Length: 269
Ligand SMILES: NC(=O)c1ccc[n+]([C@@H]2O[C@H](COP(=O)([O-])OP(=O)(O)OC[C@H]3O[C@@H](n4cnc5c(N)ncnc54)[C@H](OP(=O)(O)O)[C@@H]3O)[C@@H](O)[C@H]2O)c1
Image (spheres, rainbow, N blue to C red):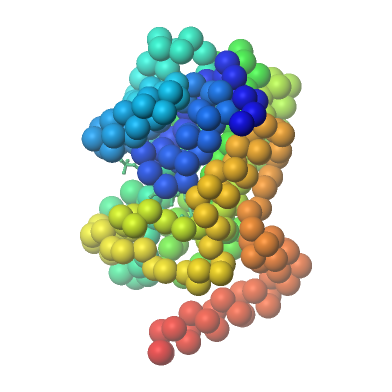
């Protein structure tokens, strides 16, 4: 296995499960010292032990990344342990499945904040360190960050906000030598215990997508790691994702008509 990240320190937010976990493992296997993060200490501890048993360099830090204070602590603890920060992958996110009419304002807020401030606060807290290392920041977005979709208004609004934030930083901080990338992740296989938020904040099972359209977490993590290594600006994942993004860009009226048609059919089915 290549050791392209030997000597590098990478923080991956929301890496106690799913895509973040697989990305952290791949970066560590390629030589990076990784900081895994999430809110649940138990989930983090289980992963830390497993990774250490495999001889990987890992530090677990529980922090809610929507809080700037906790993000500052995340960076301080990383510096105390590893001495520097080279890579920040803003992956943590809450997702939802309910209509705007049904969703409680608190649930809307939770989803929106995790996808906006949840990427902005860690970036702000890590910026001085990333300037020093001329490091890399990657935002994990979604096809929902390219076009609005039904039953996930707060998620779409949050992921679209990430595009504006990424563009601003890419222009504003060009002179610093920091790499800013964004990955629009397509349908991906989920952990069996992954849950989404519905109306009043209850957790519900994730809606299954057709298997043929789904990438594995390993494929997605590989693309994220490649985005860091090649310092790519924008990556749209999977053939399906690339097709959809071209459709959104060149046939916006047709796309809006088609998504509305499918949604109306589902409601009357
Ligand atoms: N899976 C897909 O089909 C898909 C498709 C497109 C885009 N994506 C994007 O890919 C990324 C990863 O998705 P995933 O499916 O792998 O998610 P996941 O399995 O639900 O994992 C989410 C992670 O984020 C953490 N997290 C949530 N809120 C947090 C907070 N406030 N502070 C710190 N950590 C927090 C969770 O841990 P705790 O609960 O312990 O905090 C968990 O580790 C997300 O940005 C998502 O939008 C996924």
